[in-house]
Image: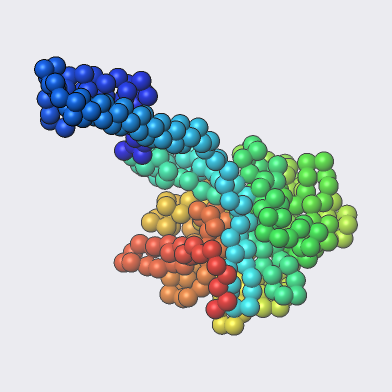
Length: 371
C-alpha cells in the first residue's frame, strides 16, 4: 500500500475549477441569466466572481502543498548500513560480549552421508535458509582480565566473507592490545584465523594463547599433515601458518584437561570434532555460560537430528556421541550457551520437547541488565 497522495498539477486544478464556473454548476446552482437588470444582481454577480477566483487560487496552493512532500519523500535515500556486530550481556559478575565475524551458508556437500545430504538438498527447495550459519568469537571481561574465546577467521577462511571480529571488538569499546588471554576451542582456521595476519603479524600482541595439547600435537604435525586427506590439508596449512609467531614470542601454551588456566573457568573436553576440541565453562554468582565451540555447525539441522555429522569432524562417530551427551545434559540445566556457528549472537539455552531439542535464544535488549 502506498503512503503517497495522488499528485495533480496546478494547471489541472485551475482549469477544472474554471470549467466548473463557466458551466454555472457551482454548489449545485445554475448560471445566472443575462436578463438580470438590477444593480443589486450585478453587484452579487461580481462578488461571486471574486469568490470563485479566490477559491481557485486556494486550491492551487493546496495542490502544491500536497505535491511537494511527495517529491521529498521519493528523493530520500535508503540507509544500507547496519549496527556494529556485537552484543553483550551479564553472567553473574562477568561481562560477555559476542563478536560477529561474519555470516555464512553451510555447504550441503559438507554433510556426511548421502541419505542425509539428499534430504537436506530436498528440504532446501522449500526452505532456502535451512543452512544459514555464522562465525563469532566471545569476549569475557572478568573485571581483572579480558579473555577472548576463539578469534574468528581473519583472512584465512571464507574467501573474504568473514574477518570482522577485530573491527567489532573495537566497536564494542576494546582493542586487540587489551586482550590478555585467548582460549582456543580448536585449531580450525575459522576459529584461529583472526590471531595472525597472512604476512605473519600478531594481531593480539599482549595475549597468551591457550590450546589443548591434543589439538596442538595433531594440527601442527607435519608428519600427520602429509598423510591427511586432501580436504583437510587447508586446516593443517593454516594452523601451521597462524601459530608460529606466537610460539616464537613465547605466548603459545598447551594444556591438558586437568589444568587450571583461569579462576572461575572449567575446561570441558568435547572430543570428536577434532582430537583436542574443548569447551570452556565460566561460573560467577551461581550463573554459568558454556562456550561449546563446534559442538554444532548447523542448528536447524543438528538440533532435530544430533546424529548428523560433517566432513570437518575428524572422528564423526565420537563427535555425534559428544553432541548427544552434551545436549541431554544442557537441556536439563540452566546454563547459558555460546555457540559461534549458531545464528548471531549465538547465545541461548536448550530445552527438550519429547525427543526434539529446542533452542531458546536470548531476548534482545538495548539496555544493560545489572541483574
